[in-house]
Length: 159
Image (cartoon, rainbow, N blue to C red):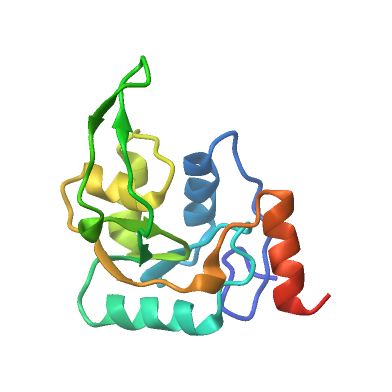
């Protein structure tokens, strides 16, 4: 295997203590001519291939950072340290963001070099002041993190 992985190569890269450290390590392992990077959470194991394809198409169409999202159906309350409601955002403008998330590689590398940490890579890009485009997400890209999520995944897979 070459020192730099290609599309047909498989490489294991040691992760870090935080998500940003793991993604940075993955970025460092990429071949220099790879221009579009997708970052995906293994917990979203049922995300369909078509979602990945739509993200790449959006980046190739000129968007530097693209994430999938679903409209929020619950009313969201912002609360203070005492548990008191301080705001109720209009849910029509809210999206539950998923992975994979797609970026121009140079932008993602710059975001990771900023030293910021975040729960997703789009937030790092936002921290640079760069717009992030949201496309339609997919119900199958839900996170499998609880027992009920695992049971849901099992039902979908027919097991």
